[in-house]
Image 1 (cartoon, rainbow, N blue to C red):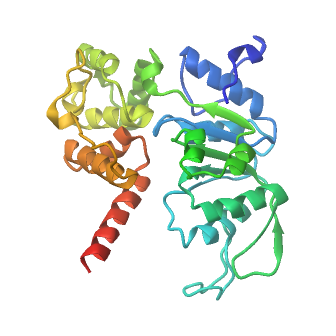
Image 2 (cartoon, rainbow, N blue to C red):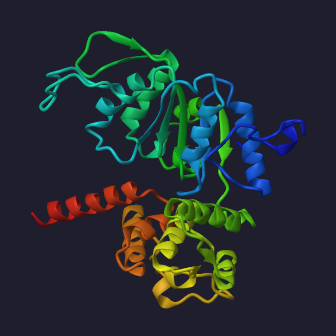
Length: 334
């Protein structure tokens, strides 16, 4: 599902208009070319890539380059909404359609009319809801929950996931027909560790923004610049931005990063016992996933945001997993 650089003429100049995405690396230049090509079309786009790699910013850039740029750009996270409420959040509901529905509510498909809707973490959406979503994408019509009046959908859909889409299909997490309906034009966002000099470019950009906001002239130390190159940034751009902000708050004129990074790049392949998790062959996938999540949380001393970044999932997805483990534990003990 990759599209080669050679598919585009050299005359295509990436991002002539302002964009929230930054990068000089070859990997990002390819992303810019793809966005410039698909932006003016009505094609559905599937953005893949690790958590924190900039998928929502890419979706915003696609919207900004479309004829819909004057309309709304909305995003909804498929893994952050309880299964019983996701239909109402997507399509809205009528007053009295269920307990607590004290007034009518427009869902994101209705609120995004004339604009673009980002379905973030689409592989986390329940399969029965994926079936309903596919029907809406194909017919461009939907009903609010509890309504008999049909609405027309004038929305461009962009989807994103931090999972491999084909693997998600094989694992039963994503309908194959929905995948190919969404992935008319796939774009893979590169992880920060493969973007070379973009790490320092982005760090300087985030620091410059903070300096402007605070009217300061703080700068990165030589050691901080070395840390930028050595660290693997498992949380990608999100981790880098948070790290720069923490250093800015703690530092005076010259900022250091190494003390703020727990898993800095290490020489060789040595792995400590604390970084190793032994899994018995034949273990259930559910048990393996739970063990990995709990071990990662322990490694990061309970810091859920860093654990989510390392695991390659959103913070909301991690919370949902932990809540599920807690509920299963309560059921088992009752």
